[in-house]
Image (cartoon, rainbow, N blue to C red; front, side, top):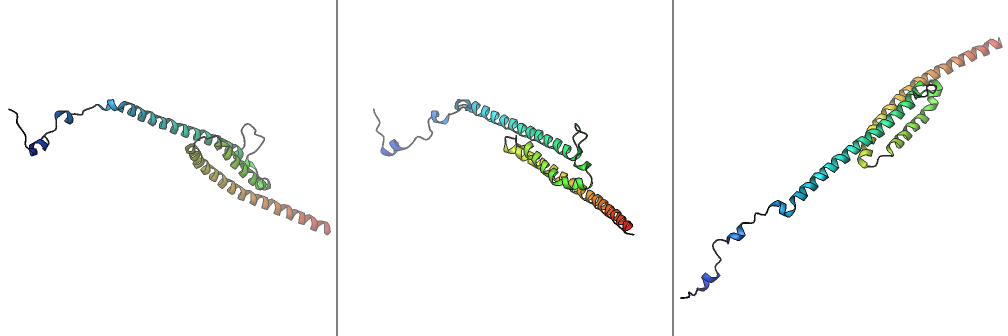
Length: 170
């Protein structure tokens, strides 16, 4: 005979959920996990390549700048008849200093102008500013030494001229 349930038994939920609801073990690959892992790997490798490019490009630009600064300060080995700033003496060195500083600034601008990324530009600027500051310090020291040489030569020629003037008047 059919059994008629009372109202509380008919509404009460089952004590355990059916087995179908407990087992949802879908593999991660079913949702594209391999694609995500592959894209993560590609992204990591792209960043490594970009970092390598930035480093190599900045180093090349710095090497070009360093070579130019050496030629300006110490002379171009391909043109031994033209001395660099450190080979100039006296008044010649004193007059040439502003032009040499401008040439170094222009070299820095030119060497860094071909860098395409901000990182490579930043690396180049960091290295090249140190070289620029060191070069300007050397130039300042050389300028002071040559100012003394020039001052001594002016004083000596002035004394010689005074001696001649005195000798001619007596």
